Length: 354
Ligand SMILES: *Cc1c(COP(=O)(O)O)cnc(C)c1O
Image 1 (cartoon, rainbow, N blue to C red):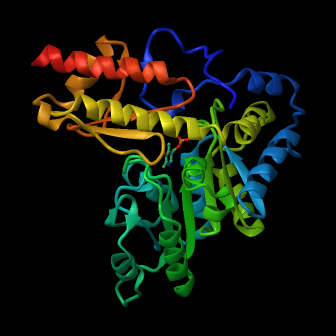
Image 2 (spheres, rainbow, N blue to C red):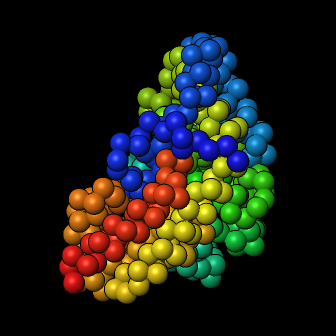
């Protein structure tokens, strides 16, 4: 497998485990951006944007795609395009669309109804109860799933669970959206084509600026009708761009060249987890299914914020996830040497506080 980390412009001494969003464009992306055919995407269309939209739709087995600046916007447009005002969106209680994006309710004019889950998978009985109709209950316009699941440490929804949610929704005549910001990570982890996951959603969002390394952008895919509706709302909220083919070209390169290499990130996340668990108590790392490791630091007597500062002083950048958990994300700028050095930094901090 090609080693993308060698020409990495980020290797300035810091090991940046804060997020896979820190990934910078590859040389191939810059080359493609320079030569991309472009047009006015808000007027009569941009050929590179169209190519990207079609490529993502084809990859995910959908009719049409819509390029947007962020995955947050893709998710919002999926909600606006498939619901009516006063309805509700039902989703897992730790879903990114709930914890971080629920302000979208102000724009979409509906309620966000959280359902408790395990490792990102909604409890089916509680989901069924949440969508059941009643004289005083809002009608459910949309159900959302998320895979891989960010707040659950990059866990992957089992295909059987996705099938059950989709069947339950279909039975009740409710559309399903998949927040697939890291859908490619989930597909790689399951060893199946991404379309196998996408079949359990009427619409699916995909973020290009995380592990896929594009500078910006996301794509929403679905039916011709839902994407046409989303296109109207995209214009309304200011998401229609002009010579966007320049950045769409980088997204296309990310989709085509970077999806398979995500397996490397998963191996390195596992290596990081094993390294930290060898360091032993009082810290404990999750066994990652994809590229996110959650490290419990509560038993160390120091908060996650103390840990972020102490590790930062050792050249390792992490993020607090609440007061007792650190979040570490692997990506193409993190190689095996970095994992070893990150492990050393954790041990150094433990010794320093002993
Ligand atoms: C990052 C993320 C988003 C938002 O993506 P942006 O492109 O940063 O807006 C949405 N959902 C999930 C699960 C994410 O991890």
